[in-house]
Image 1: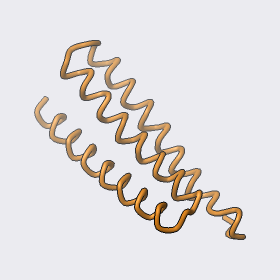
Image 2 (image 1 turned 135 degrees about the vertical axis):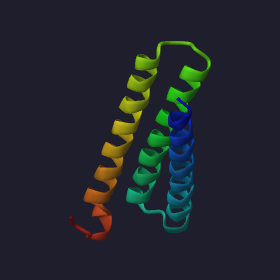
Image 3 (image 1 turned 135 degrees about the horizontal axis):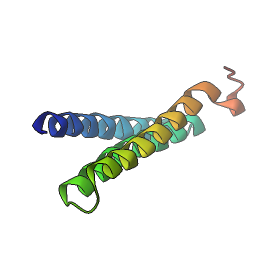
Image 4 (image 1 turned 90 degrees about the vertical axis):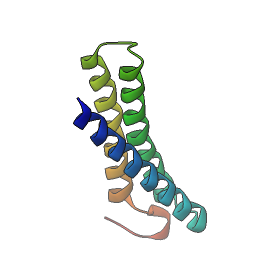
Length: 95
């Protein structure tokens, strides 16, 4: 169980840093795709945090915690894929 906790902390840290860097890039450029990318990474971080907190506080069962985390993370990665695939339609950049 300790290895799962360590892995989750690493995932949370990395996704949090990616969210921060994407947000900084968005603020610098104003790019809508970077705003969407920030939102996607934020969902991945939120999923990891929510799953971990729910499990640590024993609010619900482990399998439900994993389901919550996986659902939010999967949604976040879909948003990231969308942001990277669509690009900046306003700037003439096409996939």
